[in-house]
Length: 390
Image 1 (cartoon, rainbow, N blue to C red):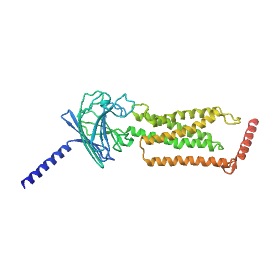
Image 2 (image 1 turned 60 degrees about the horizontal axis):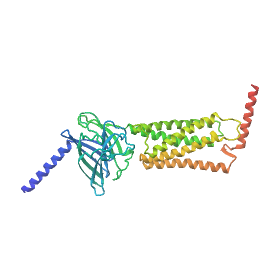
Image 3 (image 1 turned 90 degrees about the vertical axis):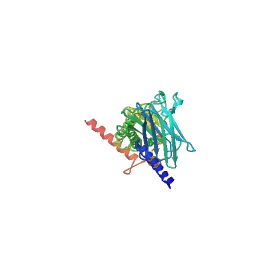
């Protein structure tokens, strides 16, 4: 009986110890979707104990630095589990001179592995990682010092969607600023890049899913209306403005203001902007060089302008598609996008078939092309008579 009481007292003591130990740790929730929690405790103001946990089975990573540009110039600790459930805690870095914002092992760039201890486990829907390291390691290449003197430290967090260490996606990352000393309990969420991203997406979609296709549509199928050119000019001009602003916002998102050479989406976006500029230049030249007595449409600049506009639209669609994959936009959004594009192409195909089947009909109030031309000729004759009389 005494042995049972002794065992109960021992278990009670252990439980109280761990409760008091856990409650002394600072913590902040990084991602409410998966309850991704960052906990930390200072050990004799020399080391730091960090615990990462989330309600998902995947890799977890945390990074920090004081002069971070995007992911560049930051120190990372990333926990990855193998097929047997063993934790591999990696000390990684993205140096300011790296061409790609993909973390490298410290030992690969001339640094050292400064993870002192690590432990972790996973269940089917939970990941727990604990590790320690020095606040100041002395590794000038691979590490960034952690300060506990009251200044704010920028933390970059990320998680995967699977066990493999691949690109985390736009929705599985974030950035906050906290005081590791624990004196200041406030947490600053740095979401300016997300705001830039939302505006970038909105402007690009508005430009190449609404404005530009309708601008092409007007030039192709509405020339019998006298207001077609001002409308065409307005639609493409606004699309050009939207695309330029969206392109600038793309640079704002990177923080280091550098072109992301490793992203296929960035290249297609650049090609789209270059072609869009050529389209605008071609449109202006077409307007300035237009002659009312010309007998056929010239190759330069009119036909080239029309060809470049269609090519720009197709390249823009590829750019949008690669962007959706790069930033892991929900599939429902891609389905809606595909439906809108299919609807536009379906309408164009229908109108092209209709024009070939009924070449003398414009489908406008029952008038055919001959009647329209006769009206235009009579109108031109009346205008000339008025000018002579004046």
